[in-house]
Image 1: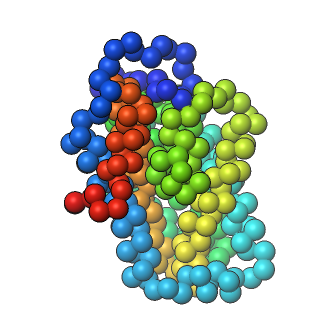
Image 2: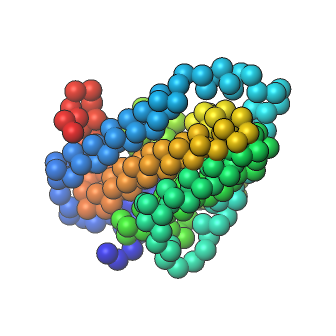
Length: 264
């Protein structure tokens, strides 16, 4: 599939095609909605299996560790985003490869408790972002292009491509932006606390040396699965928006994920 870099709302001056079908294929929208459903179910199932003590563990962490988690998450995003500048196609690792690497990383991070867990965080974030890039490449978007790299960050920061699902996402169909350094810093500053909150259970599970290794491996694998599905949702919809009216794509997806509409 040839690479595409234009979707309304992405940084590209190419014109919108004059004629294109307004309604996206219902079967493709249904498949993307099913991925959206599986994404939340998968990671939440793992967290629930490990118990409801994560919040208590986070509260019991030494003072200042939450701030360190926030800072480490922001630094990890910046580092991972910088690595995404590499030109050419993304080396294909595949879903299983990413999960295997993430599991090993999570296990190593849990061996030494909190210090090793924080040290492992940038590795986990970089692996997740690489996986998101691979999904973007699958849909024909250039992973090294600034608009695509911005969309990879949005996968970290949003529960879905809907503009008002949880306030975490600047709209799926957004205004064109010049992605300058300050704009990047603002985006990462917004996304980092949300990602830190999402990764909080991972840090809490890894807080117990040695025992945290198994939990870290399992949670890393779960996060990889979650963000892989969400990347397929986001870039699948963006790909549809190349050939169909973007607002119609967003509305069709909104209807498909409405309560009671997911059948698989």
